[in-house]
Image (tube, rainbow, N blue to C red; front, side, top):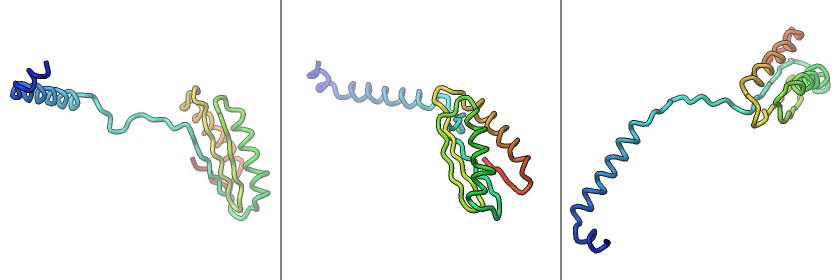
Length: 124
């Protein structure tokens, strides 16, 4: 078999050329999405409270937000940092949870808490 392929170089080159052309045709005809629908498994909340001390931020914002987030089904981990004038919370969803549902409930709770503070901005 190998001797035949070596002796018939033209047939072999035509065969491999056709395979390459067929592969290129199939590759270009595959459906593609420019912006695939990817839902992140992590979210971040940054809350700004100008002039507040880290202790006040932790007591009035971070701990309350953490309690509300812990009540959401599908949350894997929560990590937070409170510093002067701001709070940062990072949330990770469980792998088997529906992230769209988790983030919808999460945003609703963030907005409910945001309404109770007039000088605070909460952004995702």
